[in-house]
Amino acid sequence: MSAPTILLVDDHESIRVAIADFLESSGFEVVTAAGVAEARSTFRARMPDAALLDYNLADGDALQLLGEMRALDPACAIVILTGQGSIDLAVRAMQEGADHFLTKPVELPTLRVVLARLLELKRAQRTHEAAAPRQDPGEADPFLGSRGDPTPRRPGAAGARGRPAGPHPRRDREWQGGAGALDPPEWPPEG
Image (cartoon, rainbow, N blue to C red; front, side, top):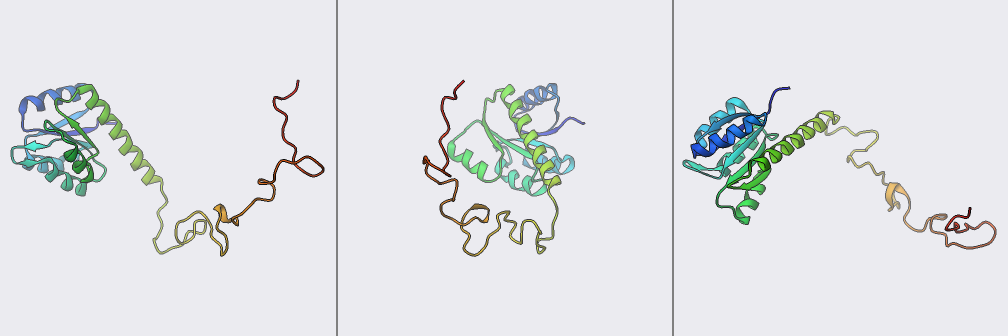
């Protein structure tokens, strides 16, 4: 299996080089871009597994790229990096499709763990989607019904699994002594 490709977008060359060197030594293949325009063309050409985007770039910001990247490849893991982290910005980035949000200076081992976990999550999602049965949306599944709801429903059946709601004849019986009744277990067991 080939190394995951990471697109690193930052307008500060020293930061790009430092992060790229660390990620390459950790087993990732890294491609870099210095701004929004270069990131767009590199993303389309390489279709990376993950993207690390600095929020403030000389020719725009990461949120400009985020929507475009999601439209081209919804499975790409996207992490936003910023030196001016705020809760509002983090919430906005996550709402617009970022998978993670980190503030600079970023601890490189933390970044490696975040990337590895995101890539594993995306890989598991792709595997799950590939294993899911394909079905014509208008066709009813004989086991699930037309709504895709695994719980059968009948008129008057309000409980789970189609059981009528209300007391269960055995489960809800009070513990009673006498013939035919359920006796409570002995605790602790003798012997």
